[in-house]
Structures are given as structure tokens and as C-alpha cells.
Length: 442
View 1 (cartoon, rainbow, N blue to C red):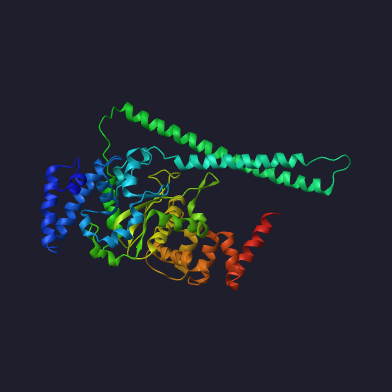
View 2: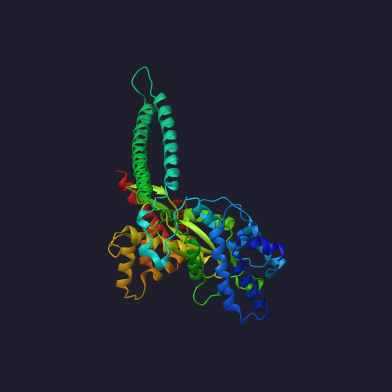
């Protein structure tokens, strides 16, 4: 066996390897006749490698899981160069290639994704809550409070005078009152997060103790590779290219490569375009909590939300899926976040999604305009227009939708102000915002 395949199949069942190499050879000699058989054996090998995969596994296995490289000879030098960024390891706690995702799950840092076909038996309500992101937000808020404390100390130093206080000192009093108000709000947020974290840790301890008491010695089945196959299938779509291996013959159809570096750049802009979707309300405390983003192999056409929250844990991070190789440009990126926002709103509405908030307002719009079909599909289309066109001042959504989104999916103030200078429509909406804020401050 060639050195490449020796490393690729390291630790894999010999009978499965022999069958793969046999079908691979037949497939290369007669591509179309053996295409389906090759696809099936490819996934059998993929799942087997993913089951055994660990940090010290060969790079050949890592790239097989990350990109579907079954044979480097299927890829031209030019295409290898185009994919260069995908081979690099870029640290991120939002974006994960499949090989990185599997390692994090095996370390126990992230619970497994819900497997569609066994959702009722997944026992997701008994999973420990991943508190990593809440812990980060807790530390960030404590740090912000220390900055405000220092500011208050400096202000207090300015309160002095031999005779009656001057106007400048009274101005300092106003600033002190504001600072104390900020500190109270910050401390309230910190207390809320601390209580939530303590409760989550207590719950995790109870789950682990319950496992010990029931004497469950059998190993928990690692189902994530099967979930990944479902994710890839959904990202490709029914009419897409179902061929699972990376090959130059299919790359002309790909017009965007979602390397982690590129995805991070888009994400940094997205934080200003739609900051609300990346926030979560934890008992009246707003914290930055984006979903996990899994970058899957395959020639994808669709980005989507796999789970809006972590199993049944409403404080857990959701997970969305974006194909590394996109046949639809950057659309899958925004599509995934749009579906995530819709599903998250529904999940957190506790059955009142048709009556309240963003989904309620949007559903009312669909009813009033007698639009039939899936509300989520209409929403995602409008959402993509909102974050790609309207953000630039290109008016593409209906007036009613613009007003709903301006309120519930607000751009950062810097974008809103810039838009107000481009068109009277946005100017009206921005002035309405400013008047409302002025009322709230009195």
C-alpha cells in the first residue's frame, strides 16, 4: 500500500480498507457506474476514521475529515493552492472544521449534537451544560466593572473645595451618580451570571453522580460522525453534487471557500450588522453568545441552523452549519444565521412565537399579506436581503419588514447613522430611534 494510504487508514479495519480500495479502483475506471457505490464506502470509511480520530492522528486523516481528501491525485496543484487557507489551523471558539469539532467533543468540552433520527432517545435533558462561554462573559463583565470602579475613584477625588462647591463639582456629582448606576447594573448582571453558572455546575455534578449511581459502565456511543453525514447531506441539498470526495472536476462549481480565516472576517463585520442575533438574554442580562459554527466538507449550497440551543438547555449555545465549499457565494453564511435567529426566537418564546416579538410581528405581516407557505423560508429570504443589501442602503424589503427588522434586528448605531444620511426612509427610522431614547432617559 502507498505511504499516503497507510497513514490515511492507520487503525482502520482491514476488511473495510480493502473494500474501499477495490471500489475506488473500479470507480476510477468507470466513474459513473461506480459513483454511488464509491460514495457509500467513502462514508463508511469517513465515519470509521472519525470514530477513532484524536489529536495525534495523521494529517492525512485530519484532511480526509476536514475536506474529504480521499486521494490527493484527484486535486490539481492550482486547486491545492486555492485551498491553502483551509489547511491552516486558525484558533477560534466560534468556527470549527469537522476534525476540530470532533476533538472538542471527545474532550468533553462540548456535548454531542442531537441526532435527528434519535432525538427522542438522545437524553439531551441529561447532558451537562457547556458553561465555557458564560464563564468568559462573566470574567469580561467583572473586568468591565473594575474599569468603572477605577473611574468612580477618580471622580470622587475631584470632589473638593474650600468654600461652596463650584459648578464643575456639581457636574462631577452627576457623573458619580451615573457611574454608581452603571456599577449597580453591572453587579446585577454579574450576580445573575454567577447564580446561573453555579446552578449549571451543580446540575452537571448531579448528572455525573446519577450516572455513577446507576452503575452505567458502558461507553456512551459517539454518534457525532453520523450527525456530520446528515449535516453534509443537508448542506449539499437534494439537487446538489452528492459526490463526497474532494476532486478538481467539481471545484469549478464552487465560487466561495469558507476557510476559518475568511469566515472570521465575515463574522467580525457581521457583529455590527446584526449584534442582536449574537446576544442571549440570561435572566434579563444580555451577554454575547454566538452559536457554534461547524464548517463541513462537500460542495454545499445551503447554510442552516442544526440546533438553536444546546439540546434542551435554553442557556446553551446553538450550532449552525456552513459548507467549506460553497456553490452559492457567501449566501450560506447569512442563511445559517438567519435560520438560527428564527429558530432561537421560536425556542425562547415558549409556544407564543406567532404572537410575540420578532416572529410574532413577522407572522402577522405574512397573514395580513395572505402569504402562504413556511414562515421561516420567507423570513430567511428577507433576512439575507436585510444583512446584505439594506445594510448598504439598497432598499430590497417591504416597508413593513424594514420597520420590523429595524426594531428587532437592528444594525449597530454607526451603520444606522450612516444609512440616515443616504436616504430619507432610513433618516426617519433613525430619528424615531433617537426620540425614543430621549424619552427613555427622562
